[in-house]
Image 1: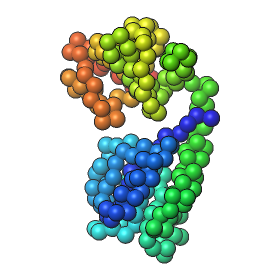
Image 2: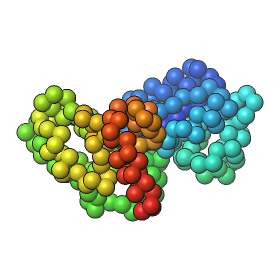
Image 3: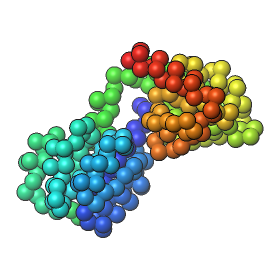
Image 4: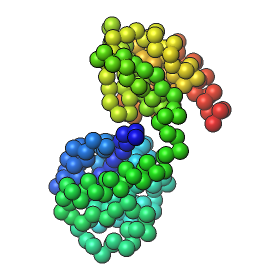
Length: 239
């Protein structure tokens, strides 16, 4: 079964409680922290530009409560409420909460809630089984490693080596960019710079000099900008 990695945000006006949840997220192999906020207003604005799968959300906060924040979010990820009060439990599940954790949060209770979120994520995304996805084999540490193209963000040239950056991890192999440029489907991957081949589906923003993929800025060659615009336009037409 494919490993799940959920992008997480933490929202809590208590810095101590927020720090506790952040630490548990960083210690969990299936979670990746992408943002933390101390109020709902900041969260509402921040989440517009950040892809999030799961929010650990406090309820009682100044100005906007956790419930009011959810009422104002156009795209709602999975929610695990983390609060010091039990009185909101019934209302929490009106918001399709994955779980409702009472403070102080123990590691076991945290892991139990995360397991529910992972199982729900798998259930919602099981239509595309990894076995049916496109992939290539990459020789790394004397072994052939399967890399699913949908999880590959970009490839970077490092002298005589090539660095693969995926949603799960990064690794380096002894190879040339040209060899992988031939293997990767041209409608999904583009060489945007002499040192970079990027997954077009992962591009979030770009300008005349850079491409942004999950807050990483990658260089864009001046003579490759038109190729990029045309490739992205072709993808948009297909969708």
